Image (cartoon, rainbow, N blue to C red; front, side, top):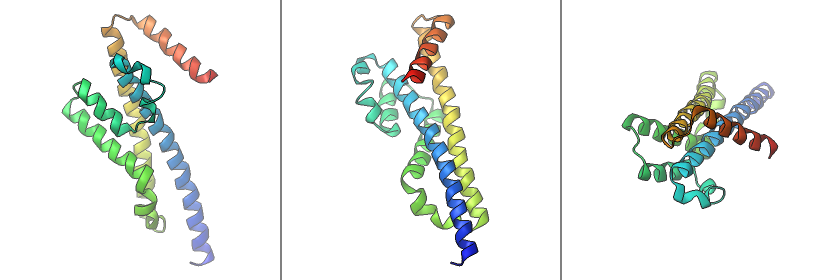
Length: 160
């Protein structure tokens, strides 16, 4: 590989690392929210809230969630696809896609795929946030109480 190709590759690696880092940040946010949601609707697992459940992968938590709640078939497929993409990002992107770094169109497709995963994580965060709100309402919480609890949670994250 000549010097210009080497510089191009190093620049693309740096850029993909930034996109991967952002995607992992978003994926972890979703994993935390799904774990909190699972624990919240499965009150028997509250003692495991801070320990055992947070050590599990998204796929494991989703399987546990499916045992205690009914998921719409389309939503279930969406979550399964997300878990597949998450696992690709975490375990296989370098192995399967390193050569894509050399060809511009393949590299751009790779960046799009990573960015799509980030966007889907954010979208699913909103979905699970709404599911959490609905569950709170079913328990009798008013929108004001829910908002107060959310603010307390946000404050606890900022302080810790």
